[in-house]
Length: 305
Image 1 (tube, helix red, strand yellow):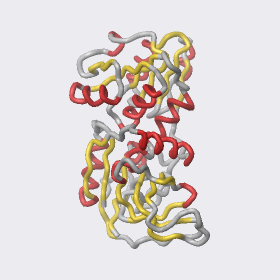
Image 2 (tube, rainbow, N blue to C red; image 1 turned 120 degrees about the horizontal axis):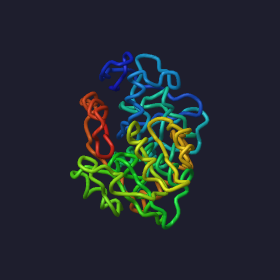
Image 3 (tube, rainbow, N blue to C red; image 1 turned 30 degrees about the vertical axis):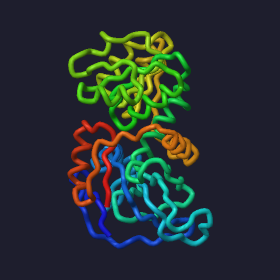
């Protein structure tokens, strides 16, 4: 089978021919319909997080996949061949950007029925992370005001939808090209980050969701109301700086959880949208990886075998 693989830290991944894996006890073999790339994949391949997620080369790229069960390993009784499923693999194992993957049966969730499997791969990490942010960390309430940076991104697009579902007033930063997209997702106010300093456009914010980091994190403190919350996704924020200003700050790193993933699948079936930037064949996966690494994707980058 074909698989996109890292061969060394910092190198561009390449498509290799490797054997089809065989499921062991408690595992299943999934024929992959689509895989979604994530910023974490870029960090893993660059060696930036090897203290947390070390990999052994060659290592197949990706954690988020959707497909159909092809073979059951010993002891698996809850699933059947041809079941449509989604899952997230352990980041150190990867394996998603390929034609087949062996995954733990305990991590499988039935795929949504309303959207195709290709799009379903795009909700695995992004939507579940947004659920974690909105419902478990920020616990957004009706009437609160939330600023979502990069609302057209994979996580941001889901934060907008879930925050609106919670009854919050949603403001987001986006480029002019993405303005209509984020408006349809539920943003009530859109700040053009290419021409406006968001600090001049908004204040008294209850929660800021930052998936950008750096200077954006620093400036975000200026728009929060006393006691407001900064939720940082790319890196741990400066907790002391926030506390010194009477503000709260938290770092959210996605923790895989089948119950949470099942919740977002149900929402996808109710009508919430997976925003897809582009879908590419596995033969062009390396170029797709490079595109994601440049940081301007509007929604998910999907790879299909």
